[in-house]
Structures are given as C-alpha cells and as structure tokens.
Image 1: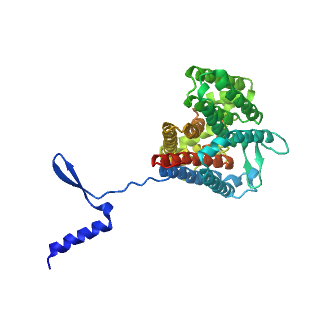
Image 2: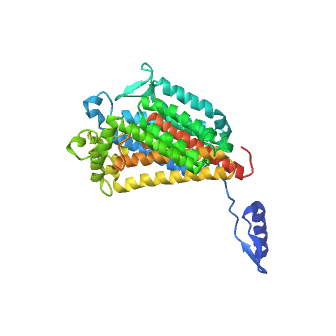
Image 3: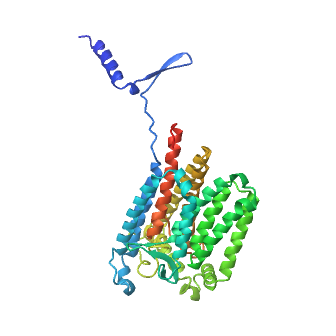
Length: 419
C-alpha cells in the first residue's frame, strides 16, 4: 500500500473535520508562508479577573473576621456569644450580598438610569426613619441601624449607592448646562446638604465624607468647569473644618491622632490608634502567623470592623498589608478602566456609575488604611469587602455587580450586539 497516499488523505480528512485548525497559507514579499492552527478568540461576558480579586478579598476577609473575633466571648461583655458568632453572621452577610449582586447584575443600565431619582428618594426616607427612636437602633451613642430581624440594615450604606446613581444621572441630564453654577452645580449641592444634615444627625461623618467625594468626583469626571469644581471643594473642606472645630469630641480625635502616645490620649481617644500601631509593630515583615495576634485579645477595640487591617498587619506582617493595598489598587484601576471604556463608547451614565464605584471603593479603602496606620485621624469607616458589616458588604457587592454589568454591556456592544 502506498503510505504517502494514505497520509495525504488522512490529512485532508482531519482538515475537513476541524477546518478552524487547518494551517493558513499567507503570501508575504513574494514568498508563500504557512501559519499554524488558529486559536479562536472568546469574548467572555464579564471581567473574570475582577470577580477573582473580589472573591479573594471576600474570603480573606471572612477568615480574618473569624480570627479577630474568635476570642471575644472571653470578655464578660460578650460572654453570651459563641466563638463563631461573628463568623456565622458574616458568612450569612456574604451569602445575602452575593444573591443581591446576582440580581443587580441582571438589571440593565438603562433601568438603573430610570430608577435613579426614586432610589435617591428611598435613601432619604430611610435616613429619616433611622432617626426615629422606636425604629432606629442606637449603639455607642449613634443611631445608624434599622433592625430587620436577621441583621441590622445601615441606611447610610444605601445612601452611598443612591447618591452615586443619582449624581451620574444628574450629570447626564445637566450636560448641556454643566458650565453654569446655579443651573448645574447648585441643585446637586442642595441635595448633598440634605443628605449631610441627616447623616450628621446620626452622627455618621465618615459616610458623609465618602458621599461628598463620590458626588464631587462624578461632577468632575462629568466635565464640570475646573474653577467651579475647586470652588466646591474649598466649600466642602471649610464645612468639614467647621464641623470639627465646633465638636469637642471630634477635636479630641484630631489631637489624639497628632500625639497618640501622650499619657492622656493613649488611654482615651488615641487608645485604638496606639494599639493598632503596636499590632503593626509586632507583625514586622512576615507577621506572627494566622491566629497569633495578641492585640485582638481585648486590647484593640473593634478589631473585626474598623481595625481589621491592624490584625492583618500583626498576623501577616508587611507582606499581608502590601498585598491588601495592592489588591485594592488593582481593583480601583480596573473599575476606572471599565468606566472610561463605557464613556468612550458614548455611554456616559454607565461610565460615570462605574467610575463612581471606583472612587467609592478606592477612597474608603484609602481612608481605612490611613486610619489603621496612623496617617489619618480615626474615623469609623470599614475596609470594603473585608470588614464585618452586613449592610456594607451587601452594598459593596451590589455596586461591583453594577460595574460588571457595565463591562458586560460594553462587550456586547463591541461584538456588534445591542443592550
């Protein structure tokens, strides 16, 4: 049998069965070349890397919340709690947050744009309800939570998302008059003022600070005149300075931040900061190991919420802290890129929403890291996606799901489809 003839027909048969893998002849410079098999490009429906980083932060946060809270029942104040109390509740919050995120991903951006005013009104209503004594729950002198049985809902977290959506829709509607202060900027300033008064009544200055940064960032990215933007920024800084100066306990926090080791501050307003710095010092380069933290043993208050990074620094050292910061930097950069891509495709609302989420996650992470490291005054802001807190986790995941929706619609449009 002629083996060459058999091989030739076998090759033709294989090319017929998988034509995409057949070599392609290409003529370059008069010579004939053969390219190797084709590798078809697959456009995925969402950003897998962003999902992976999000899940990594969520799972790491779950482990650290358990590590930071496992010894809390040893304190007589928490004797009624089980060692897994906060672990179970945090895991439940993650489950609820993921379900909400999946549902939010199904909503088209055009629908979010239509819902923007109603979502803002709903957030204002909840901010009013939480101030009513028999509805809102008071903890440590602050009335910020509405009990819902299985968990406590924090309206200020919904307000961040609502202001983000509303400000993006507002800029789209005011695009023609964005150069006029009274017609474009002043109405948004009034809306922020109402939200600020309600938040300061709780009080929750940290949430108000994040909301102001989100709204101002969206105004700036939407193309508001630079002079008007810096004028608004100056007014905001002056307002925060007046709030701090007229509040004795806020002034004490500033002074404690400037000198946390003084005998007076170390046992009062600088207590958390001083013990957070001790935790970072014990961690050194590689940390003392998972579960080996000493500061979480009733020395560092709120170790599972606002100061979770200090426990990470003690147990994982400088390596762990840099890894957390690196993940948040990458996430913020990726979200901003998705937003820029949407704006480049003339999808202004979707692009501003995505970039607003980037500002939210990035700025709040920056504040929390700065507070834990003593670079910023102590402020009650959790580390996004990692710290204990059901409302924060749920709204963070919901916001990231909307970003994934923006990316999903971008990919559909790039393939010539319709959203």
